[in-house]
Amino acid sequence: MDSQIYGLFLFILLFTSSAAAALSSNPHPTPKHKTPSSSQPPTNNSTPVNSNSVLVALLDSHYTELAEFVEKALLLQTLEAAVTRHNITIFAPKNEALERDLDPEFKRFLLEPGNIKSLQSLLLFHIFPTRLASHQLDGILPHECKTLFNDEHVNPLDMPKVVRPDDVVRPDGVIHGIERLLIPRSVQEDFNRRRNLRSISAVFPESSPVVDPRTNRLKKAAPVPAGSPPVLPIYDAMAPGPSLAPAPAPGPGGPHGHFDGESQVKDFIQTLLHYGGYNELADILVNLTSLATEMGKLVSEGYVLTVLAPNDEAMAKLTTDQLSEPGAPEQIMYYHLIPEYQTEESMYNAVRRFGKVSYDTLRVPFKVVAEEADGSVKFGEGDAVAYLFDPDIYTDGRISVQGIDGVIFPVDVPSTPVTKAAPVAKAVAPQRRGKLMEVTCGVLWAIGQDSRLTACH
Image (cartoon, rainbow, N blue to C red; front, side, top):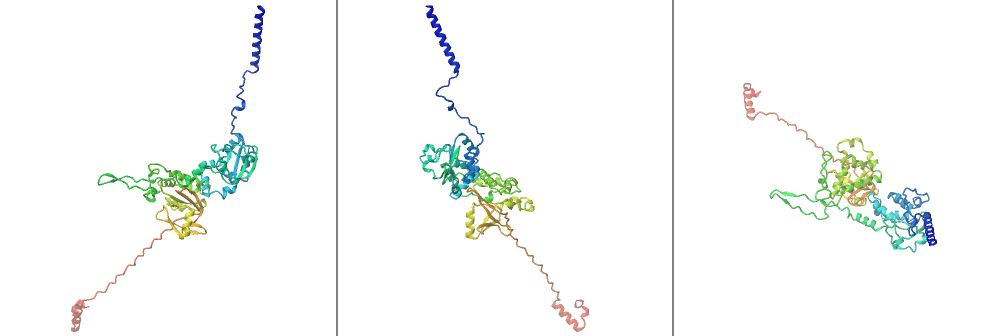
Protein backbone atom coordinates (compact mmCIF):
# COMPACT_ATOMS: atom_id res chain seq x y z
CA MET A 1 0.00 0.00 0.00
CA ASP A 2 2.86 2.33 0.89
CA SER A 3 4.54 1.63 -2.48
CA GLN A 4 1.33 2.68 -4.39
CA ILE A 5 1.11 5.96 -2.46
CA TYR A 6 4.80 6.66 -3.07
CA GLY A 7 4.37 5.98 -6.84
CA LEU A 8 1.39 8.36 -7.06
CA PHE A 9 3.34 11.11 -5.25
CA LEU A 10 6.29 10.65 -7.62
CA PHE A 11 4.03 10.93 -10.69
CA ILE A 12 2.46 14.19 -9.43
CA LEU A 13 5.92 15.65 -8.72
CA LEU A 14 7.22 14.85 -12.22
CA PHE A 15 4.10 16.34 -13.93
CA THR A 16 4.35 19.58 -11.91
CA SER A 17 8.06 20.07 -12.71
CA SER A 18 7.50 19.51 -16.48
CA ALA A 19 4.64 22.03 -16.55
CA ALA A 20 6.75 24.64 -14.71
CA ALA A 21 9.58 24.16 -17.18
CA ALA A 22 7.20 24.67 -20.12
CA LEU A 23 5.80 27.89 -18.65
CA SER A 24 9.26 29.28 -17.94
CA SER A 25 10.38 28.71 -21.54
CA ASN A 26 7.29 30.50 -23.03
CA PRO A 27 5.67 32.73 -20.41
CA HIS A 28 3.56 34.71 -22.98
CA PRO A 29 2.44 32.41 -25.74
CA THR A 30 1.48 34.15 -28.98
CA PRO A 31 -1.77 33.00 -30.59
CA LYS A 32 -1.32 31.39 -33.96
CA HIS A 33 -3.96 33.59 -35.61
CA LYS A 34 -2.23 36.86 -34.57
CA THR A 35 1.19 37.43 -36.11
CA PRO A 36 3.35 40.50 -35.62
CA SER A 37 2.90 41.39 -39.26
CA SER A 38 -0.83 41.89 -38.75
CA SER A 39 -0.34 45.03 -36.66
CA GLN A 40 -0.52 48.39 -38.40
CA PRO A 41 2.81 49.67 -39.63
CA PRO A 42 3.95 52.84 -37.94
CA THR A 43 3.37 55.96 -39.95
CA ASN A 44 6.20 58.44 -40.07
CA ASN A 45 5.39 61.50 -42.16
CA SER A 46 8.69 63.11 -41.30
CA THR A 47 10.73 60.56 -43.26
CA PRO A 48 12.62 62.47 -45.97
CA VAL A 49 12.04 61.46 -49.57
CA ASN A 50 14.92 59.65 -51.22
CA SER A 51 16.68 61.39 -54.10
CA ASN A 52 15.86 58.31 -56.18
CA SER A 53 12.13 58.74 -55.50
CA VAL A 54 9.56 58.85 -58.24
CA LEU A 55 8.45 62.31 -57.02
CA VAL A 56 11.91 63.76 -57.55
CA ALA A 57 11.98 62.11 -60.97
CA LEU A 58 8.60 63.65 -61.83
CA LEU A 59 9.75 67.18 -60.95
CA ASP A 60 12.91 66.73 -63.05
CA SER A 61 11.23 64.94 -65.96
CA HIS A 62 10.01 66.29 -69.30
CA TYR A 63 6.45 66.41 -67.90
CA THR A 64 6.96 70.06 -66.98
CA GLU A 65 3.31 71.08 -67.21
CA LEU A 66 2.19 68.34 -64.80
CA ALA A 67 5.04 69.17 -62.40
CA GLU A 68 4.00 72.83 -62.45
CA PHE A 69 0.40 71.86 -61.69
CA VAL A 70 1.55 69.70 -58.74
CA GLU A 71 3.53 72.60 -57.27
CA LYS A 72 0.65 75.07 -57.70
CA ALA A 73 -1.77 72.60 -56.09
CA LEU A 74 0.48 72.30 -52.99
CA LEU A 75 0.41 68.50 -53.23
CA LEU A 76 4.08 67.69 -52.61
CA GLN A 77 3.63 66.98 -48.90
CA THR A 78 0.60 64.77 -49.56
CA LEU A 79 2.46 62.76 -52.20
CA GLU A 80 5.54 62.42 -50.00
CA ALA A 81 3.36 60.87 -47.29
CA ALA A 82 1.83 58.50 -49.85
CA VAL A 83 5.25 57.38 -51.12
CA THR A 84 6.42 56.54 -47.61
CA ARG A 85 3.43 54.20 -47.16
CA HIS A 86 3.32 52.39 -50.51
CA ASN A 87 4.37 52.44 -54.14
CA ILE A 88 2.48 54.69 -56.52
CA THR A 89 1.78 54.75 -60.24
CA ILE A 90 1.50 58.15 -61.97
CA PHE A 91 -0.27 58.51 -65.30
CA ALA A 92 1.31 61.72 -66.61
CA PRO A 93 -0.35 63.56 -69.53
CA LYS A 94 2.05 64.84 -72.13
CA ASN A 95 2.79 68.55 -72.23
CA GLU A 96 0.76 69.07 -75.39
CA ALA A 97 -2.35 67.78 -73.63
CA LEU A 98 -2.03 70.50 -70.99
CA GLU A 99 -0.81 73.31 -73.25
CA ARG A 100 -2.69 73.13 -76.56
CA ASP A 101 -5.33 70.41 -76.21
CA LEU A 102 -6.80 71.62 -72.90
CA ASP A 103 -9.70 74.07 -73.05
CA PRO A 104 -8.27 77.51 -72.10
CA GLU A 105 -11.35 78.34 -70.07
CA PHE A 106 -11.05 75.06 -68.14
CA LYS A 107 -7.33 75.65 -67.55
CA ARG A 108 -8.06 79.16 -66.27
CA PHE A 109 -10.67 77.64 -63.95
CA LEU A 110 -8.15 75.18 -62.52
CA LEU A 111 -5.48 77.81 -61.90
CA GLU A 112 -7.78 80.27 -60.10
CA PRO A 113 -6.84 80.52 -56.39
CA GLY A 114 -10.37 79.75 -55.27
CA ASN A 115 -10.44 76.42 -57.19
CA ILE A 116 -7.37 74.76 -55.64
CA LYS A 117 -9.54 71.87 -54.37
CA SER A 118 -10.62 71.05 -57.92
CA LEU A 119 -7.00 71.15 -59.10
CA GLN A 120 -5.93 68.81 -56.31
CA SER A 121 -8.75 66.39 -57.10
CA LEU A 122 -7.79 66.38 -60.78
CA LEU A 123 -4.14 65.58 -60.06
CA LEU A 124 -4.86 62.91 -57.45
CA PHE A 125 -7.13 61.23 -60.02
CA HIS A 126 -3.96 60.46 -62.05
CA ILE A 127 -2.15 58.66 -59.20
CA PHE A 128 -2.79 55.04 -58.18
CA PRO A 129 -1.72 53.82 -54.72
CA THR A 130 -0.10 50.70 -56.15
CA ARG A 131 2.64 49.76 -58.59
CA LEU A 132 1.42 48.89 -62.08
CA ALA A 133 4.03 47.89 -64.64
CA SER A 134 3.43 48.19 -68.36
CA HIS A 135 2.63 44.49 -68.79
CA GLN A 136 -0.17 44.84 -66.21
CA LEU A 137 -2.00 47.65 -68.00
CA ASP A 138 -3.62 45.56 -70.74
CA GLY A 139 -5.71 43.34 -68.49
CA ILE A 140 -6.28 45.85 -65.72
CA LEU A 141 -9.42 45.23 -63.68
CA PRO A 142 -11.83 47.87 -62.31
CA HIS A 143 -10.86 47.23 -58.67
CA GLU A 144 -7.22 47.87 -59.59
CA CYS A 145 -8.02 51.39 -60.84
CA LYS A 146 -8.42 52.95 -57.41
CA THR A 147 -6.91 56.45 -57.23
CA LEU A 148 -5.73 58.71 -54.42
CA PHE A 149 -8.74 60.97 -54.99
CA ASN A 150 -11.13 59.79 -52.26
CA ASP A 151 -10.39 56.18 -53.27
CA GLU A 152 -12.43 56.69 -56.45
CA HIS A 153 -11.94 54.28 -59.33
CA VAL A 154 -11.22 55.03 -62.96
CA ASN A 155 -13.30 53.16 -65.49
CA PRO A 156 -10.85 51.02 -67.52
CA LEU A 157 -12.80 51.96 -70.64
CA ASP A 158 -12.09 55.65 -69.96
CA MET A 159 -8.36 55.13 -69.55
CA PRO A 160 -6.47 57.13 -72.21
CA LYS A 161 -3.90 55.56 -74.47
CA VAL A 162 -0.51 55.00 -72.85
CA VAL A 163 2.00 56.52 -75.25
CA ARG A 164 5.13 56.09 -73.10
CA PRO A 165 4.88 52.96 -70.90
CA ASP A 166 7.39 52.69 -68.07
CA ASP A 167 8.74 56.12 -68.95
CA VAL A 168 10.19 56.64 -65.46
CA VAL A 169 10.85 53.66 -63.19
CA ARG A 170 11.99 54.09 -59.59
CA PRO A 171 12.02 51.79 -56.55
CA ASP A 172 8.94 53.47 -55.06
CA GLY A 173 6.88 54.00 -58.19
CA VAL A 174 6.54 54.23 -61.95
CA ILE A 175 5.37 56.91 -64.40
CA HIS A 176 3.48 56.13 -67.59
CA GLY A 177 2.94 58.80 -70.24
CA ILE A 178 -0.65 59.17 -71.49
CA GLU A 179 -2.04 61.15 -74.41
CA ARG A 180 -4.75 63.17 -72.64
CA LEU A 181 -6.02 64.34 -69.26
CA LEU A 182 -8.22 62.33 -66.90
CA ILE A 183 -11.02 64.52 -65.54
CA PRO A 184 -13.14 63.26 -62.62
CA ARG A 185 -16.86 63.84 -62.78
CA SER A 186 -16.90 66.06 -59.68
CA VAL A 187 -14.38 68.49 -61.20
CA GLN A 188 -16.34 68.59 -64.45
CA GLU A 189 -19.53 69.39 -62.53
CA ASP A 190 -17.80 72.17 -60.58
CA PHE A 191 -16.56 73.71 -63.83
CA ASN A 192 -19.98 73.52 -65.49
CA ARG A 193 -21.63 75.00 -62.42
CA ARG A 194 -19.14 77.87 -62.35
CA ARG A 195 -19.40 78.45 -66.09
CA ASN A 196 -23.18 78.54 -65.99
CA LEU A 197 -23.03 80.92 -63.01
CA ARG A 198 -25.35 78.73 -60.99
CA SER A 199 -23.31 78.95 -57.81
CA ILE A 200 -22.86 82.75 -57.98
CA SER A 201 -26.17 83.88 -59.42
CA ALA A 202 -27.08 87.09 -57.64
CA VAL A 203 -30.36 87.61 -55.88
CA PHE A 204 -31.64 90.92 -57.14
CA PRO A 205 -32.71 93.51 -54.58
CA GLU A 206 -36.29 93.87 -53.52
CA SER A 207 -37.80 97.33 -53.29
CA SER A 208 -38.49 98.73 -49.85
CA PRO A 209 -42.11 99.22 -48.72
CA VAL A 210 -43.71 102.57 -49.56
CA VAL A 211 -46.43 104.17 -47.45
CA ASP A 212 -49.35 105.77 -49.26
CA PRO A 213 -49.87 109.18 -47.54
CA ARG A 214 -53.58 109.23 -48.37
CA THR A 215 -54.50 105.90 -46.83
CA ASN A 216 -51.51 105.52 -44.47
CA ARG A 217 -51.11 101.95 -45.73
CA LEU A 218 -48.29 100.16 -47.42
CA LYS A 219 -48.22 100.26 -51.18
CA LYS A 220 -47.57 96.99 -52.91
CA ALA A 221 -44.30 97.15 -54.79
CA ALA A 222 -44.35 96.17 -58.41
CA PRO A 223 -42.96 92.63 -58.80
CA VAL A 224 -39.49 92.45 -60.33
CA PRO A 225 -39.28 89.78 -63.04
CA ALA A 226 -36.70 87.09 -62.45
CA GLY A 227 -33.46 87.80 -64.22
CA SER A 228 -34.09 91.50 -64.67
CA PRO A 229 -31.34 93.99 -63.80
CA PRO A 230 -31.47 95.90 -60.51
CA VAL A 231 -34.19 98.54 -60.21
CA LEU A 232 -31.88 101.41 -59.30
CA PRO A 233 -29.07 102.54 -61.58
CA ILE A 234 -25.62 101.77 -60.27
CA TYR A 235 -24.91 105.43 -59.60
CA ASP A 236 -27.75 105.59 -57.06
CA ALA A 237 -26.42 102.50 -55.28
CA MET A 238 -22.92 103.91 -54.87
CA ALA A 239 -21.59 105.53 -51.73
CA PRO A 240 -22.08 109.32 -51.64
CA GLY A 241 -18.38 110.08 -52.07
CA PRO A 242 -15.01 110.07 -50.36
CA SER A 243 -15.71 113.31 -48.50
CA LEU A 244 -18.85 111.92 -46.84
CA ALA A 245 -19.44 108.89 -44.70
CA PRO A 246 -19.84 105.61 -46.59
CA ALA A 247 -23.35 104.61 -47.56
CA PRO A 248 -25.02 101.99 -45.37
CA ALA A 249 -24.71 98.42 -46.52
CA PRO A 250 -27.53 97.59 -48.96
CA GLY A 251 -27.85 94.06 -47.58
CA PRO A 252 -26.11 90.82 -48.58
CA GLY A 253 -27.92 90.03 -51.79
CA GLY A 254 -31.47 90.37 -50.58
CA PRO A 255 -33.28 88.42 -47.86
CA HIS A 256 -32.17 85.02 -49.16
CA GLY A 257 -28.45 85.75 -48.99
CA HIS A 258 -27.59 83.58 -52.00
CA PHE A 259 -24.70 85.73 -53.16
CA ASP A 260 -21.68 87.18 -51.38
CA GLY A 261 -20.10 89.91 -53.47
CA GLU A 262 -17.37 90.63 -50.96
CA SER A 263 -15.92 87.15 -51.40
CA GLN A 264 -15.86 87.65 -55.17
CA VAL A 265 -14.00 90.95 -54.77
CA LYS A 266 -11.59 89.21 -52.40
CA ASP A 267 -11.02 86.48 -55.00
CA PHE A 268 -10.19 88.94 -57.77
CA ILE A 269 -7.82 90.93 -55.52
CA GLN A 270 -6.04 87.69 -54.57
CA THR A 271 -5.86 86.86 -58.27
CA LEU A 272 -4.18 90.23 -58.91
CA LEU A 273 -1.59 89.48 -56.22
CA HIS A 274 -0.90 85.97 -57.54
CA TYR A 275 -0.80 87.21 -61.14
CA GLY A 276 1.94 89.70 -60.30
CA GLY A 277 2.52 93.26 -61.42
CA TYR A 278 -0.68 94.74 -59.95
CA ASN A 279 0.21 95.14 -56.28
CA GLU A 280 -0.18 98.93 -56.33
CA LEU A 281 -3.76 98.69 -57.58
CA ALA A 282 -4.64 96.08 -54.95
CA ASP A 283 -3.12 98.32 -52.27
CA ILE A 284 -5.23 101.29 -53.39
CA LEU A 285 -8.42 99.24 -53.46
CA VAL A 286 -7.91 97.71 -50.01
CA ASN A 287 -5.75 100.04 -47.92
CA LEU A 288 -5.76 103.53 -49.40
CA THR A 289 -9.49 103.62 -50.16
CA SER A 290 -12.63 101.68 -49.28
CA LEU A 291 -13.38 100.85 -52.91
CA ALA A 292 -13.03 97.09 -52.38
CA THR A 293 -15.83 97.13 -49.79
CA GLU A 294 -17.98 99.34 -52.00
CA MET A 295 -17.45 97.08 -55.03
CA GLY A 296 -18.43 94.07 -52.93
CA LYS A 297 -21.70 95.75 -51.94
CA LEU A 298 -22.48 96.65 -55.55
CA VAL A 299 -21.84 93.11 -56.79
CA SER A 300 -23.96 91.74 -53.94
CA GLU A 301 -26.85 93.84 -55.18
CA GLY A 302 -26.66 92.27 -58.65
CA TYR A 303 -24.53 94.82 -60.49
CA VAL A 304 -21.64 93.85 -62.75
CA LEU A 305 -18.28 95.61 -63.09
CA THR A 306 -15.34 95.69 -65.48
CA VAL A 307 -12.08 96.88 -63.94
CA LEU A 308 -9.44 98.46 -66.16
CA ALA A 309 -6.43 97.64 -63.99
CA PRO A 310 -3.25 99.71 -64.51
CA ASN A 311 -0.09 97.73 -63.80
CA ASP A 312 2.59 98.75 -61.32
CA GLU A 313 4.72 100.52 -63.92
CA ALA A 314 1.79 102.74 -64.88
CA MET A 315 0.92 103.49 -61.26
CA ALA A 316 4.53 104.48 -60.55
CA LYS A 317 4.25 107.29 -63.12
CA LEU A 318 1.56 109.09 -61.13
CA THR A 319 2.84 112.37 -59.70
CA THR A 320 2.33 113.74 -56.23
CA ASP A 321 0.11 116.51 -57.54
CA GLN A 322 -2.24 113.96 -59.12
CA LEU A 323 -2.67 112.09 -55.81
CA SER A 324 -2.49 114.94 -53.28
CA GLU A 325 -5.95 116.41 -53.81
CA PRO A 326 -8.71 115.12 -51.49
CA GLY A 327 -10.50 112.19 -53.08
CA ALA A 328 -8.04 111.96 -56.00
CA PRO A 329 -7.34 108.19 -55.67
CA GLU A 330 -11.07 107.45 -55.61
CA GLN A 331 -11.74 109.62 -58.66
CA ILE A 332 -8.90 107.97 -60.58
CA MET A 333 -10.20 104.50 -59.75
CA TYR A 334 -13.82 105.43 -60.50
CA TYR A 335 -12.76 106.33 -64.03
CA HIS A 336 -11.32 102.79 -64.41
CA LEU A 337 -14.57 101.06 -63.35
CA ILE A 338 -17.11 100.31 -66.09
CA PRO A 339 -20.62 99.30 -64.94
CA GLU A 340 -20.81 96.58 -67.61
CA TYR A 341 -19.44 93.08 -67.95
CA GLN A 342 -16.91 93.19 -70.77
CA THR A 343 -14.22 90.71 -71.74
CA GLU A 344 -11.27 91.16 -74.04
CA GLU A 345 -13.16 89.44 -76.84
CA SER A 346 -16.33 91.54 -76.47
CA MET A 347 -14.45 94.85 -76.34
CA TYR A 348 -12.23 93.98 -79.30
CA ASN A 349 -15.20 92.90 -81.39
CA ALA A 350 -17.00 96.14 -80.52
CA VAL A 351 -14.13 98.42 -81.52
CA ARG A 352 -13.51 96.41 -84.68
CA ARG A 353 -17.13 96.81 -85.68
CA PHE A 354 -17.90 100.37 -84.61
CA GLY A 355 -14.47 102.00 -84.64
CA LYS A 356 -14.84 104.01 -81.42
CA VAL A 357 -16.92 102.90 -78.45
CA SER A 358 -17.70 105.01 -75.37
CA TYR A 359 -18.18 103.17 -72.09
CA ASP A 360 -19.84 104.69 -69.06
CA THR A 361 -17.71 104.90 -65.93
CA LEU A 362 -18.48 105.33 -62.26
CA ARG A 363 -16.98 108.80 -62.51
CA VAL A 364 -20.05 110.66 -63.69
CA PRO A 365 -20.43 112.14 -66.29
CA PHE A 366 -17.16 111.11 -67.92
CA LYS A 367 -16.92 108.24 -70.36
CA VAL A 368 -13.89 106.24 -71.45
CA VAL A 369 -13.35 105.92 -75.18
CA ALA A 370 -12.01 102.67 -76.65
CA GLU A 371 -10.79 102.05 -80.18
CA GLU A 372 -8.84 99.44 -82.10
CA ALA A 373 -5.08 99.95 -82.38
CA ASP A 374 -2.48 97.47 -83.62
CA GLY A 375 -4.66 94.43 -83.02
CA SER A 376 -5.48 95.48 -79.47
CA VAL A 377 -7.82 97.88 -77.67
CA LYS A 378 -6.71 101.40 -76.81
CA PHE A 379 -8.42 103.34 -74.04
CA GLY A 380 -8.45 107.09 -73.50
CA GLU A 381 -7.96 110.18 -75.60
CA GLY A 382 -5.19 112.71 -75.99
CA ASP A 383 -1.91 112.02 -74.26
CA ALA A 384 -3.33 109.83 -71.46
CA VAL A 385 -3.94 106.57 -73.34
CA ALA A 386 -3.47 102.94 -72.34
CA TYR A 387 -3.47 99.66 -74.23
CA LEU A 388 -5.00 96.35 -73.22
CA PHE A 389 -1.92 94.60 -71.88
CA ASP A 390 -3.07 91.55 -69.84
CA PRO A 391 -6.51 90.43 -71.06
CA ASP A 392 -8.98 88.55 -68.86
CA ILE A 393 -6.94 88.42 -65.66
CA TYR A 394 -10.12 87.56 -63.79
CA THR A 395 -13.56 86.77 -65.22
CA ASP A 396 -16.36 85.15 -63.26
CA GLY A 397 -19.51 86.51 -64.91
CA ARG A 398 -19.91 89.38 -62.43
CA ILE A 399 -16.44 90.98 -62.26
CA SER A 400 -14.05 91.26 -65.20
CA VAL A 401 -10.47 92.50 -64.75
CA GLN A 402 -8.54 93.70 -67.80
CA GLY A 403 -4.90 94.75 -67.36
CA ILE A 404 -3.78 97.97 -69.07
CA ASP A 405 -0.36 99.57 -69.35
CA GLY A 406 -1.28 103.11 -68.35
CA VAL A 407 -3.43 105.28 -66.12
CA ILE A 408 -6.13 107.08 -68.08
CA PHE A 409 -7.70 110.41 -67.21
CA PRO A 410 -10.89 111.98 -68.52
CA VAL A 411 -10.56 114.73 -71.06
CA ASP A 412 -12.05 117.84 -69.46
CA VAL A 413 -14.93 119.26 -71.44
CA PRO A 414 -13.70 122.68 -72.58
CA SER A 415 -15.96 125.30 -71.19
CA THR A 416 -17.26 127.76 -73.78
CA PRO A 417 -15.67 131.14 -73.05
CA VAL A 418 -18.26 133.80 -72.36
CA THR A 419 -17.50 136.78 -74.59
CA LYS A 420 -18.46 139.95 -72.84
CA ALA A 421 -20.00 142.51 -75.15
CA ALA A 422 -18.12 145.75 -75.34
CA PRO A 423 -20.00 148.61 -73.66
CA VAL A 424 -21.85 150.69 -76.22
CA ALA A 425 -20.94 154.32 -75.95
CA LYS A 426 -24.01 156.45 -75.89
CA ALA A 427 -23.74 159.19 -78.45
CA VAL A 428 -25.15 162.33 -76.86
CA ALA A 429 -26.70 164.47 -79.52
CA PRO A 430 -25.91 168.15 -79.12
CA GLN A 431 -28.77 170.12 -77.80
CA ARG A 432 -30.62 171.98 -80.45
CA ARG A 433 -32.64 175.10 -79.98
CA GLY A 434 -36.26 175.04 -80.68
CA LYS A 435 -37.59 176.23 -84.07
CA LEU A 436 -39.59 179.05 -82.45
CA MET A 437 -36.48 180.37 -80.70
CA GLU A 438 -34.50 180.34 -83.94
CA VAL A 439 -37.21 182.29 -85.81
CA THR A 440 -37.50 184.84 -82.98
CA CYS A 441 -33.76 185.44 -82.83
CA GLY A 442 -33.65 185.81 -86.61
CA VAL A 443 -36.34 188.53 -86.56
CA LEU A 444 -34.61 190.42 -83.72
CA TRP A 445 -31.26 190.18 -85.54
CA ALA A 446 -32.89 191.66 -88.66
CA ILE A 447 -34.14 194.76 -86.82
CA GLY A 448 -31.00 195.07 -84.75
CA GLN A 449 -32.61 194.20 -81.44
CA ASP A 450 -31.06 190.70 -80.84
CA SER A 451 -28.94 192.00 -78.00
CA ARG A 452 -31.98 192.37 -75.82
CA LEU A 453 -32.57 188.60 -75.66
CA THR A 454 -29.66 186.71 -74.07
CA ALA A 455 -30.86 183.35 -75.40
CA CYS A 456 -30.01 184.51 -78.92
CA HIS A 457 -26.25 184.83 -78.08
